[in-house]
Image (cartoon, rainbow, N blue to C red; front, top):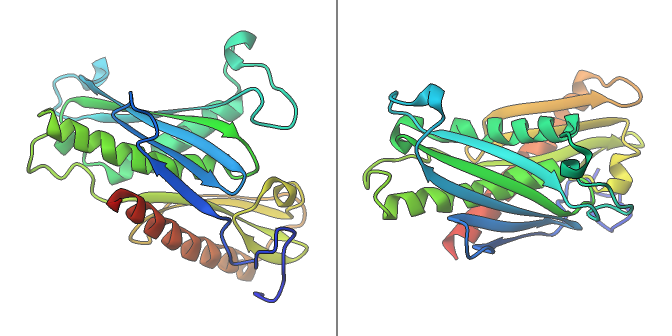
Length: 244
């Protein structure tokens, strides 16, 4: 499989160049500008003392996320959803996915009655915006938790973060399983999948669809193996960014 070269020169099991610029925003409690090749997403984490009404008095915190795409993140301009007067189904879906991806790695009791809102804004889209958003959101979330600890909103000895999370896309192109699809591959994929995993190698969510021909178990296993190795590499990149 590794002998096959893709349009950008990568092998099927190779990630695009990944960069994480930690602390990109000087205003947010946590932030990261993440690049998956040509896809660039700004992730900010806002820490607020207090929780939604339905959680008040329960001694637990909350983490939620919102996703959006700038009008010229794509080749053609898209109207802002605020101007359209409604949020699209895709935006809702990805916002919920990011939130679901982050909450399993947070001890809500250790977070206390505090809320962290993650905003993921796509500056430039070239496939894999939701996976880049989740991967960058973890770095922003980490720093927002540390900010809350420094300010005394979270107990010094509380371990609010109990793991890390990243996500990557995989797909089958011309019969070959491939990792981290840019747009030109994503639109051609016979099978398309997004895999969210913890840094310890556990699965949080797997979204897979046969866009063309159905796939068999051997192909599914190959895609999950690619995603596992890709997410392991992303976890190493995240830790390197947090250590800098």
